Length: 119
Length: 115
Image (cartoon, rainbow over all chains, first blue to last red; front, side, top):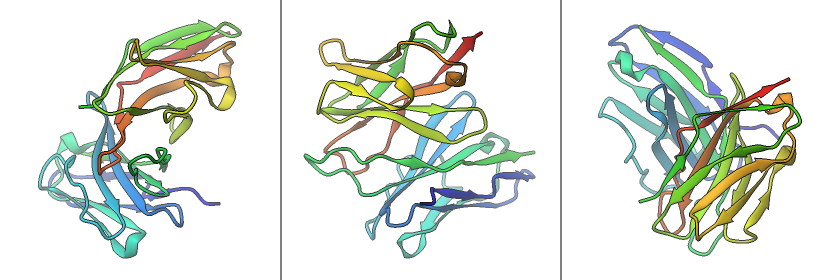
């Protein structure tokens, strides 16, 4: 079946503009994650959604970053007033279910990413 | 807190020779451990995962990893490297029992395969 898809694949924007990045998870996956991959910082967790629960936003680097997940499926990551240090590849992943005590770890499947360049 | 350390940022091997990519972990929980691979301009692909079943885990493309609790290691190996194995490899940990299930990535090891 279809994997995780992300759009756009590339985005170039000017400093100070807002950007929206989209993620379509694998159908039926209840858990959705955003990560960022940048030079010097490696791969870092941003935010996690699970069903109707409150998202875990502990990885968001500043209040300029926000994310939504509508209807338990598609997610949008928004970066307001972009800065040059926001330039990175933004990766989305989904998994069938979150971890539960005693249950085997669910595999996260990654999309191809959105490469963001802030000029 | 959970973390992983990949001991080599770059590894270069000749085609047909063994591959060893080293990873040590630190975890407050009984960890789940993964290796992901990222080929140039492609997404992350799961190679294998350890979730407290067999300590020797076999993955795709002939890779395997052994969980050694006494050494807190989860090294990735392959008996014979192929040119197509050239990529960046990430060792990843997550703790069970937590609510988030976020992955914590190592800094990556870039594997070069020489003809």
